[in-house]
Image 1 (cartoon, chains in turn blue, brown):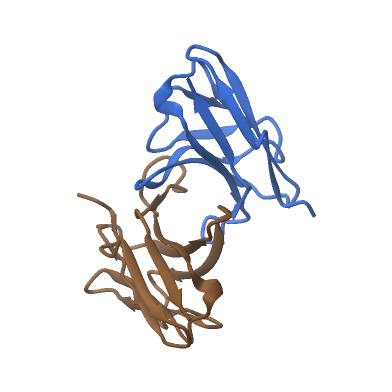
Image 2 (image 1 turned 90 degrees about the horizontal axis):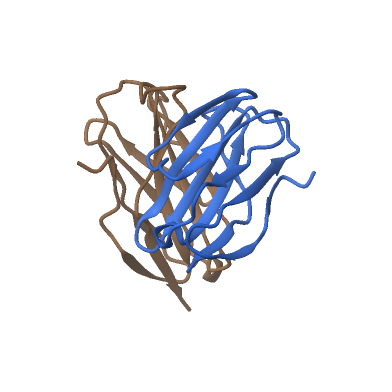
Amino acid sequence: NAGVTQTPKFQVLKTGQSMTLQCAQDMNHEYMSWYRQDPGMGLRLIHYSVGAGITDQGEVPNGYNVSRSTTEDFPLRLLSAAPSQTSVYFCASSYHRDNEQFFGPGTRLTVL
Amino acid sequence: AQKITQTQPGMFVQEKEAVTLDCTYDTSDPSYGLFWYKQPSSGEMIFLIYQGSYDQQNATEGRYSLNFQKARKSANLVISASQLGDSAMYFCAMREANSGGSNYKLTFGKGTLLTVNP
């Protein structure tokens, strides 16, 4: 099993550009989440999903969209990148809400 | 008010000694779960231990144990026999059952940076 994979590992965008961060898992997990990690802030939940076709907002959803058309994939879309979205983004999945979340390796995004 | 508070930005411990990392939480939900994660300098997030609010016993996983004091709303992580490889950032997180939506929101603390000295 590859676990949770994220692409790209690094990305530089200009203000106003859009892009999609990819996340995939091969463990047949129903639960998936996107977090951002900023220095001194811990991890903050952006969006999450409890199954294909079901998504919900987390703590900091503004400027981001998600969809879940399959169990495996949970892409995160930045609609119009802003410097405030410079961060490290983690995708995570779990079998059940009380089970451990398996994290991907992260994507380091810089918005100029 | 913060839902998860980790009051120790940094901690130092000698190799082979035990260390306690503090975590307090704030919730009015009777059903919740508490997690601890480790983040080494390489950046990956590693799950350590889980405690459910209705669990009767404190959780243990190898050298990790969770000192769960429900009345005090604290869930401190105890690492016994520290190793150099334990040097990392440690995060406490909470899932509340009635956090709205589909009840899968995890809230993380800001973390404690543990340094193990030889």
